[in-house]
Length: 392
Image 1 (cartoon, one colour):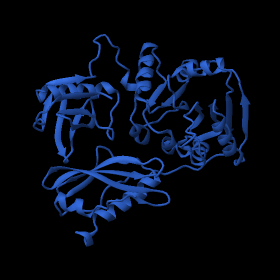
Image 2 (image 1 turned 120 degrees about the vertical axis):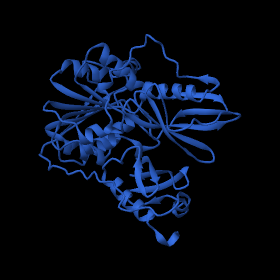
Image 3 (image 1 turned 180 degrees about the vertical axis):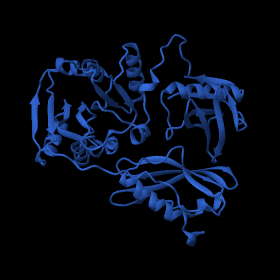
């Protein structure tokens, strides 16, 4: 993660701008600050907090931005504006370094609001080094491949390869695959690859494969489309085999089959004599279309100071059967404005987001929650909490 360690110094005055990087405002808590940044069409926060006798300035995890070069530029520009005395840094980059092809890196909002194609769509979940994803795209240029990955260095590496090899049919997104399929149209995908996912033997609830994921995959797949799991984990194999057995759809299990391309890890496992299983399930029916509700506005007008709002927020998480809400970390901007950090949505995969209280207006920041059913239920609860007159 890009960061700076600097001598203790005052925060820059906002709003301010340098070299196309805009610093809008600073939100403060007793222990840290959130510095709002706009750069290259992206909006995000830098986090500043005390570290011994110095300051640590880094990219805020809740609003993380890709490619990472944007965050590095923001940190460098902040240090220049604040006249920081830098003690250590990991934001240096080589002037000859090839920049990734950013037009193929998409925000999740692109797939919610804009994505359209007449081409056949294939998805790879957790592409890692990208060897399989790149091979498929180069071999099938008439198809669109969507690569899902949450490991930023893997994303950067694949984007470099896309540029070096002039590949034009890959879209990359940094997002959790367990949620992504909810935003794909019914009967719109031909193949979904889940190759060597993290087994999570001690935390099985974190696995990609689940009844919820398979149900979404079968809805999104066209008739004859396939969801293909490839794994070297005996426990993951047994777990997924049990999942597949509860479906009426046709499924197949193959062992130690050779593919046209394999990852470096797969090559290593083969040399070690490990078994590799392929479990595939096929969609066999047309699924109804889905309607996505994208409305996350707050139908309330704030009449209170920021400090008064903080007092009514519950200290403990609210957990329901299919969603949760947890408020934490308020950050003050002015007397009647500030940020509230909240975790919301599905208990197993909650969304981390900020709520901006700006005088009378309350809204999510820097983006809206994704339009999942669990996020909508959490939003309704948040709205009820914020208008709770009894606790004021």
